[in-house]
Image (cartoon, rainbow, N blue to C red):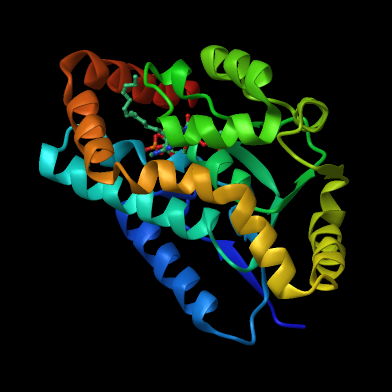
Length: 248
Ligand SMILES: CC/C=C\C/C=C\C/C=C\CCC/C=C/C(=O)SCCNC(=O)CCNC(=O)[C@H](O)C(C)(C)COP(=O)(O)OP(=O)(O)OC[C@H]1O[C@@H](n2cnc3c(N)ncnc32)[C@H](O)[C@@H]1OP(=O)(O)O
């Protein structure tokens, strides 16, 4: 039926390393150019984890040129996903913090597994960093200004039930039904003529995408100088240490 399933596989936690981002973007571009493909189901092959988000090791202890290169690729993936002409449905089968949530938010429909261990949200503030304006814009577009304002400041990671209530996800289903539900949702969306759906999607998303497109270079500079600060590097160091200690 012209549907591809993209399974994220970058063990142990599907963090979006530079290599993973690049591969993701290339795969997406290939699918976009394949006229037989109308929809993509985005999911994970890592048990219990959709994606741990951006790779902290790409943003810690590197040089400004590396940060700039990394951020350019983060932007590129986001623009491709957010403005895709294809129908994107995410089957969120695990934890989905920050950049993981960003991937899901780019989709046209989000189905999440009903497992309270899995959480989703833009938790950047918990790391001592700030969600960029285009992450924020997409959050506002999805859950509204008030909910986004609160969730961004608190760095809220929502359980599936909370995520459904606030609108971060569209549907929560038993874990063993995530993929079948994503397929049935896709079938419904495929019934809509592509040209009218694509024009409508473009109308809804263009202003948000253009907001980044018109200031991509400035956004890269902003990220690079922010992430290079000693205080920010210290926060990331502490967060990484906390992740290590969690293991005991
Ligand atoms: C006015 C504004 C001004 C300026 C703004 C300008 C620019 C903006 C600036 C910055 C924007 C940055 C945006 C950032 C977005 C992000 O996505 S940051 C990443 C956020 N991710 C997280 O917080 C998730 C952290 N991880 C976890 O919570 C857990 O690992 C997990 C729930 C995903 C999985 O748990 P477990 O299964 O228990 O696995 P472990 O915790 O043991 O992890 C295994 C292994 O993996 C390492 N790891 C985990 N997450 C990441 C990651 N995101 N990147 C890199 N590595 C990660 C973890 O440390 C373990 O490593 P080892 O100890 O085994 O070496």
